[in-house]
Image 1 (cartoon, rainbow, N blue to C red):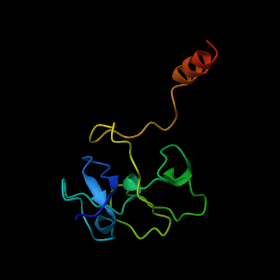
Image 2 (image 1 turned 45 degrees about the vertical axis):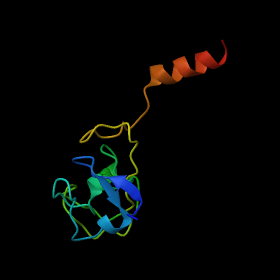
Image 3 (image 1 turned 90 degrees about the horizontal axis):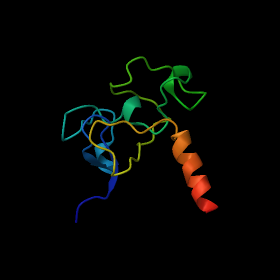
Image 4 (image 1 turned 30 degrees about the vertical axis):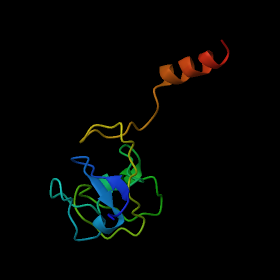
Length: 104
């Protein structure tokens, strides 16, 4: 039996297992590095160092393999299309509609 899918490639959306994440490993779908900032759950464009972890060392190339000890695979929703990044913040109008629907 195959390994369980732990996340998806930031570039092509290919499912990745625990064994696919390594400093020198690459995505089987598009050959991009899997252990990189763009594939980490802490990646946050617009934040200092583009990372949610305040103590992280600066990594300049977010799409290249690195040695970051804070790396954790980004677990994406299967509803995202390949290459589509998850939204940094929920749509405020959608949140308001959902709240209003609770009180109908």
